[in-house]
Amino acid sequence: MNDKSRWLQILLPAAVLSAAVGAAWAMIALRPGSLPAPAEPPVPRVEVVAARPQTLKLNVQSQGVVAPREAIDLIAQVAGKVDRIHPALVSGGFFKADEVLASIDPRDYDYAIVATQAKIAEAKRVLINERAQAEQALSEWQALGQGEASDLALRKPQLAEAEAKLQAAEADLAKAKLDRSRCEIRAPFSGRVLNKQIGRGQFLPAGATIARIYANDIAEIRLPVGINELAFLDLPLSPSGPAAHWPAVTLSAEVAGKPQTWQGRIVRSEAELDSSSGQLFLVAQVEQPDTSRDGGAPLLSGLFVQAEIEGVARAGLYALPRNALNNLQQVKLVDADRRLVFRDVEILRSEPDRVVVKSGLQAGERIVVSDLPLPVAGMRVEVAPNQP
Image 1 (cartoon, rainbow, N blue to C red):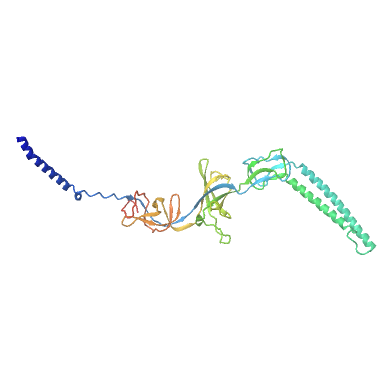
Image 2 (tube, rainbow, N blue to C red):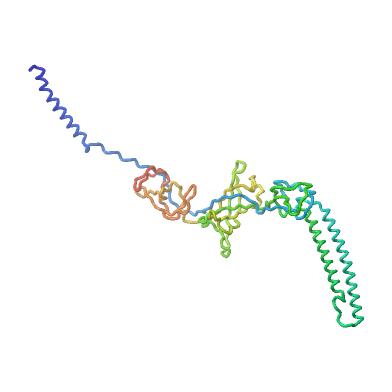
């Protein structure tokens, strides 16, 4: 055996022993009991608001289309040729009550009046003659002294016929004058013209439509309201109940690119619920809709508007932002130990930007209004500075 082999026999066991000692030390040094403790998770910072009971007026939202209070077809009651048309009888034209919008050639009806006047004169002559003959017949019968005279002998039927013919002729004259007055077609109210259906020189039969007109003194809007939302309104729905003040309503729409508002009032409710939606329609009225106020736009017929109906005031309610509730509709609270608490509450109404809570909260409690990624009941939180 040479020197090299001798050295290998000496060093190899020493190297194996050193590796075993190093491995043992590493296992001892890295045992689980000596691993570093995990870091505490950061305490989330939240924004809170104090619960404060308030007296809130719970308005009801709705929408509808503006319509005139009254719209009718203007009808010709007599036949004839149109000889005059008012300049206002055009689509969109304004007119006043009792204004003559169109007229029919009256000459035929003037002739009828003259003819019936002649019939009256003749009937009067016949009646005078019959009265004279009746008086003569009575005198002759009394002179003869032959008992009770018959009606025919005293010419009473002839006299009654003459009186009836005079009354008929007078009725014909009244009818002729009435037809003559109907040659002037007048507006029954102040308003505007929707459309015109006649022209000058056109012959109209009796019953022909002249125009479609509507009253512009009051505009009406039918507003659907859910049955549950009626609890927020003061409506005299029962005719036998105490009289109540109908609520005000604010209408809004965008006209010519600008937001516009109009003030009105609910005046009545319809007689039955809508069969398809189960809603009750309330009718709002706006006076003088064509009159611009404070530079605003008129309330045009056919305009779609949003409506906010004035509700009744209720005390002891809490108005909270929508993010104050979790997915289970529970309020997130911070208790005295700065820990997160979930609580069930009674929600009176949910609105687009807030939730109105009826009960389940105490005044002064801190309500979390900031979003938490993973909220867990009992977790510690930190209230942001300058928070209650």
